[in-house]
Image (cartoon, rainbow, N blue to C red; front, side, top):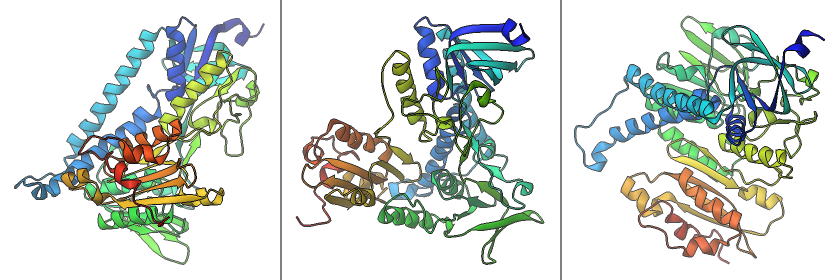
Length: 464
């Protein structure tokens, strides 16, 4: 027998990567008495906690408070000022992250799973060799295997860009400094959150995006409303701009655009997407196929091309949200137990955590029309909601798309304060199959932002 066969340790479930879906499944099955091992390279708790959602939203909170303090006199408070203290900002972000990492570690241990810190690569079907973080190695084989290794920021192959030492959405969270002038490459939700955040922290920010307009998947009227807010806050926007090269000129990074225009800054932030962590896993040795971009090839049950081998979260090509990865856990858990749960038709909401927030669920107006629905559109300014006025946060617009005959809600975009919370009410009505009249007539607490749903579904853009 070879060394791998001699050293093999068999478990009921082997999870490779500790993202939201994988770690939740590992803990759940371990608590139920199953023999579970989970291998993680180093980010205890996964990408979200360490270098994505949690640290980013912690800093968004700081940026929002700084903006509120700048407008404190509107709220009747004189002499209240704020300024960025980089050491305190780092401490705030690190405190939140470290607390959640510690909580996750305790949960891993308390669940009874075998938590393995190290780097795994497949050597056969459902079998990995793990180079342990503290030295040595182990060979693990699962009756079932779940791959949840996530994604990392993509560095586009632009000449000179890598040599210009760009920041990524992960490295910028270490807060080496507050950039004096920040060029953000990419106008998606990651790029826009950072752009507005660092504008609040005092940076001069320019967003460069190759699309002709920001958020091309959103309806133009919603995207244009957000663009107006960003510009009002001081974010400069260059859309329809193709980056041809980049390089250092003295202390500056210079980004050269097609047509000869140049955009320069003290720092450049890459926010052009993420790529899967599959290189080095030797997935082919396990019979697991990947697509042209490197994402694990799965069906709508999240099964891979290899028997008893599954993939969840970003690496499986699922929507790149922690809440989607959590639902992947539910899908695989049920299927491991012999069920037939699928990802097809999932209603996945998302929120862009700018200030104000843009929350979306379901179809846009454009998508609904292209799908052949006979629709009505409701639209109103956020200033119509009493709670927005008490907050003195009246920027934004709400929009909903409704099927004309049934009155069912097909989708909604909420650009305004606390939209990430309000959208859950709309999503619940959609999942329950309730007509829009249910939200129009629901008794909702006054004054709350959710109360605005009563009004929204009376504000039709047509007259019939």
